[in-house]
Amino acid sequence: MEENINPNKIFFFDTTLRDGQQTTGVDFSVDDKIKFSSALDELGIDYVEGGWPGSNPTDDKFFQSTVNFNKSNLVAFGMTRRPSTSVSNDPGLNSLINTNVGHICIVGKSSAYQVEKALGISKEDNIQMIGESIEYINQKGIEAMYDAEHFFDGYKLNPEFAMNCLLEAYKNNARWIVLCDTNGGTLPHEVEEIVSEVIKKIPGERLGIHAHNDTENAVANSLAAVRAGVRQVQGTINGLGERCGNANLVSVIPSILLKTDLDSSIPRENLTLLKKTSLLLDEILNRVPNSQQPYVGENAFSHKGGLHVSAINKDPKTYEHIDPQLVGNTRKIVISDQSGRSNITSLLNTVGINPDDHKDKLDLLLQKVKEREFQGHAFDQALASFEILARETLFGIPEYFELVRFKVIDDRRWNARGDLVTESEATVRIIINKKEYMNVEIGNGPVNALDKALRKSLMEFYPALEDLELTDFKVRILSSEKGTDAIVRVIIESKDKEGNFWTTVGVSTNIIDASYNALRESLIFKLIKTS
Image (cartoon, rainbow, N blue to C red):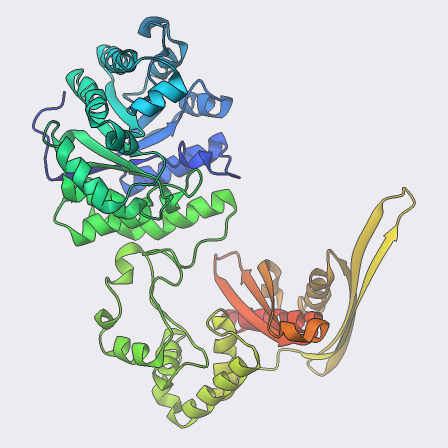
């Protein structure tokens, strides 16, 4: 057992690649696991749980691969020996040993109800399984951890048995004894009360917390356990996990590092990697990032109300609990029909336009913003469209091209092989440098066909558009009471090879026309930035 443990140090244990993989729709490849575990190592996470070797081929291959950590410790997860099987003959336990990792976390029941209903064995047998498994791992020279499954629910029903499970692991020198709120139904005040009782018998520097989010209290429960003395926190990046997820380490880590005096292996300067790590996971899983996520979300430090922005311009502390740069994020000033002059001024500074040079036109710009928002535009979701409007209003932009007309035809038919085929054909006529060009393209849907036909004409003059890619397309009905006559808003997100993202908006009673408007502004924004 490790001596001279710092009682003021918090250890972070990431289980994204194991417990997070139990999320519906999540399936990591071996390469995904290697890539993401390397990011966790760069961040400075103490323990990275790689999976459950012996349970599936992916985890087996991951533990057989070469994973070189500089800071983190790789952990293999499994369970206690099975009933009526000795530790030396238990295939699951020996699969963990044979991974040759230095850290193993095993799960075992700590609830009398679960032991009787799920396992169908005696309470005494369950306790013996825990002790023998921890002892066996220690004998192999491996650091042993015990995940006390269903601990909080078990403690409420039978505190004596739940504590005996923990004490058995403690007696057999488990480095960590992790208190699990497996069903996620415990509230923060209960966690703090129960942990305070546990610490009377087991030191907090040997205890961990593993909270699920079924009451949306996983982060709060983790912080409550830390407040009560627990010194290891388990969780996942972005709160990934079965059902409602696990404690979100993206929220827990900065809350502890920035808002307590506790120590950690993660240097404060590494917090700037949090947003990057969060986005990497979404990228691997092909998920849209949660814009409302605390600390790292796109809107975590966004300000829309004019009074708020006016105060932010004087001192960001008026409406921000931390400097967003500490966690790799940025401040975002939102433009809308609720905006005041201060919003316009702040955002112009952000996009590199000095508002002091255009004081005589700021009120005109604000009026245009409010008018367009009334028509259905949403500049808080499409800041690139705001920048185009600002440049047009304040000092003008080049006329890169002029649309003469476009026509889109959808064709749905059966081909010669009897397959149903649906394709779209777009014809676009535009004027560039006083000369008219026409192109026809077929695409996968009307917007794709329109995009291809438009860019085919433009590429000869503006080759920078070649690397532009449309990454997201959203449509919202703004006046549903009008039925098929409704006004629609189209939001298009684009990116280029430099990794720049921008969003534009188009509004019309015609969905194709609204799409063209958003598409046109996406192209123009790229051309403005290129030139």
